[in-house]
Length: 132
Image 1 (cartoon, rainbow, N blue to C red):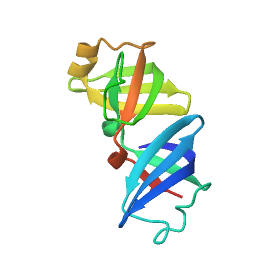
Image 2: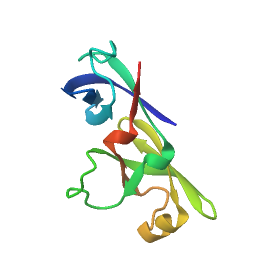
Image 3: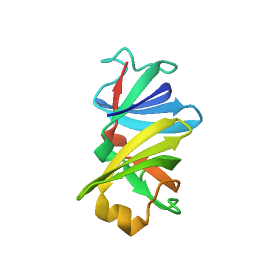
Image 4: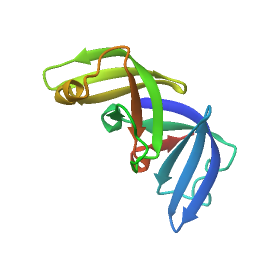
């Protein structure tokens, strides 16, 4: 499980859903949660929270990612690549800390990913959980 810490910078509420924007160093991450500031006291602008997401939910891209709907993006360098028969694990060093991604070994080959390459790690807003 990936875990990064940041500070809530904005909360948009609609019904029982909140779109929480969190600043992690200089990178903004958005998470949609089934909570509101009224139902979860930790959902307050300025609070420090943890963003949690599974390694299998981290999408990897190489090259330009301008025209894509995934808002949570951070560039990094592949520090370690462990190739398996079907799945491979990438350890990516980013400005917000290390992120681990597990993708298919076939995708590693298609994208020509090797240790030392620059990649973009992307996480969908609905795949991020928030904790105090």
